[in-house]
Image 1 (tube, rainbow, N blue to C red):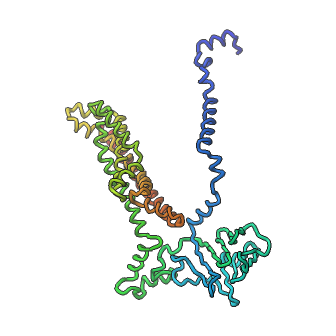
Image 2: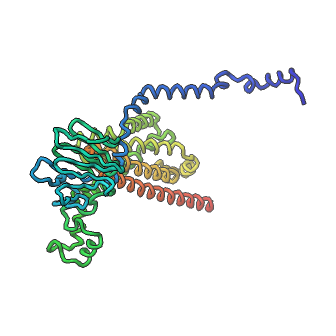
Image 3: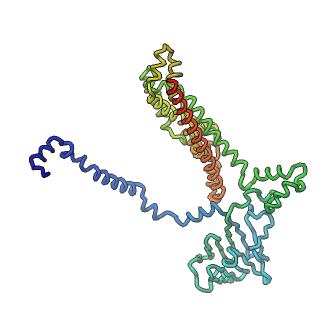
Length: 454
């Protein structure tokens, strides 16, 4: 069927909203796309992203990541002493009087340090050195005022005025000057995670340690080996397990206490803030603005304030969470109350019950499951938040984490605490989900039972 021009015109006149739409309705997808492009361009300019990306030290990222899962040992050999002997850092992971098998004193008086087996090593005495890596040996003369490479320089070797540096990848590096050779050798894993160098169990194989704990002679008179092993682990000076776990418990307690107190205070205030329950509109608006104020001040700002008031510690952290949760839970509680079905309340009211009984039997059964679910979610979220505010002195593992990061050399400990925090968040996330599911199932069964009775 072919329509005439008059018929088409008549249809357009009857439905102008379809055929004669305003320009902004016809072109809004194009305008939205143009606005998005303009905003992204503004963001690139405002944050100077091209310059940031160009000047960022991306080469440091692999080093930082490797330090999370590895450790290094740094023997240093002084060549200006009567006898060449290796020296290690004061708190070396090898303990006192280290004698690793990868530092070899040769019969001719030279030393060989195997950075990655025979494939990457350095051999030296007081007059010369030779660095081997990637199938190439680089000879270095030390007889002049500065080290000199007597041959081609590979790309993994950097020559400075008075130092030659060989970057050997993840395995480590070698630094050579005329008066010393310094080696950095990297190992996968966490050194001395269970027992530090002061422990009598240090350096012993796992089987021997278990044998000593089960049936061995007492290593410390009057103390069982099991108690001694537990004490050595808990008071490990390098990893500080006892302090870390205590701070982690502080974080959990801070989150629980702050959320609980915030919920207790927000619960009655929410009834006075809900428009459909409070008799005073002014009181409702005042309380809602109060909730807005309490939650608009970030938890971190509250933590800074209370740290100044009470000093560093978990009390400041608990107070910061408490004040933030008054605003957050007060708002969510009052909104839940405003969205209730009024029929149960009207039914209780028709029986002549007073105001308190109306709220008890007409409102609470409907909103309590919502309140509990929201509170559980906030508790779970505040465990993460308590870690952040700890960095400003509000106690918990956040402060410990910040102290480890500030050294810029203890990234394995940082990773350890990050993993513990993730584990705790995972556990409490599952606990919270389990409780919410049980609560939802209970509510469903309750409603079904009520419907059957009705």
